[in-house]
Length: 89
Image (tube, rainbow, N blue to C red; front, top):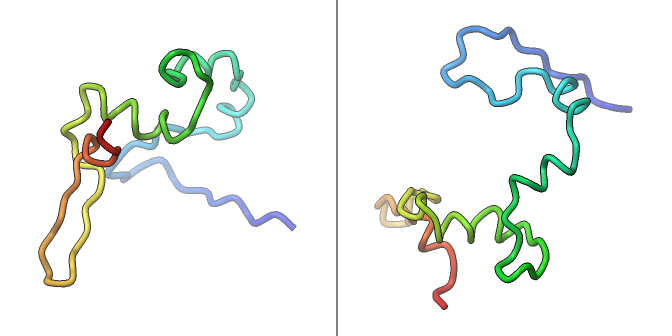
């Protein structure tokens, strides 16, 4: 049995969702369009979700943005930028 769909009134949101109508977006979705948003691996070696989610941003204009924030055991806050999430070449 599928869980019930959560319905929320479109008002009072602090942040506007990027997908207001899931069914509409699903109906309009085409893989051909989605592929245009993906870089693919360097040298045309295929597609890898880790590269799309992290690596390409570490090499681009968002490299200095914070990707991970956590509280370490001594209660300090650690922040890691996108460019530090990938191994050095």
